[in-house]
Image (cartoon, rainbow, N blue to C red; front, side, top):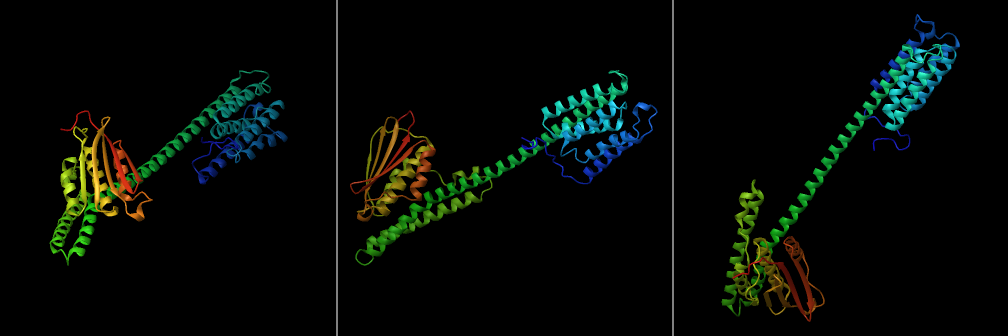
Length: 394
């Protein structure tokens, strides 16, 4: 809506300045010139008091932008007064033409059309009075044509201004949309990087921390156990350094599509390796895998691996007794992953939560799965449901 709600005027995109003042001077000069010119035909000459009436529309010319309808009404009123005095004043008719342009340019389209039509009808009827009742005298019809033409030009100017304003707003809206999209993509990329960093590093750092504790407690009494823990620390350190290096290479790569295979995505085929790593770190894992489980897409297969890794990491960090049970089964075409571990006495009333579970929920939701957690009878249970494919796994 490019109109003033209070006045109905269409605001101009160009601020008032030298051109505006110059156009006012030109409009006033034209009205004055047509009022004092010595026309050969006496019917066009306004003398004495009628000259003052013929010059009265001059006062409306500087105000025609702010009050275009009032300027048009004043010009028509002066034309009517002079016409009934027997004179067809060109100055008032020229002022009406200029005001008709302003009305069509500065007001609503319907109001402009009606105002211009009324002005043309008034000039058509009133001009016949000093011309002996001849409605179709060419001298009067030319002013009618000028008023109609001025109205059409004013409507075209208003339409052009509205079009430019609409294009400007559309460009600004598109630019704002680009900025918002860029911010959204940056936020999504930050979340993805944080999630990938957690998946790559958190598990290995947890293994290092727990193995360091085992080495510290076993150094005096069981040096062979401490040696195994130190070996696990060295292996986990190398793995995490390699993972961080691959992630940095991916972030620095100009063409990320060519670097996607820097860190291959692990799936359930590597479940045995995952369980062995946790067993080496001191976590007793009981694996129960039902036969004929549903096949998964590559993305879901990777999410399943990450879900078990997250569940076992939490069991190792927050669980009691270094014990955990992993269940993998099929139900109604879906794959159900369950990780259960006993809770410590001080953690029993609460359900563990953190960035790992938050990222896991995001990953599972991306493959149309769901995550459920529960704390019951001193045990924490993580249940992940993933949609399966049509063909069962062999």
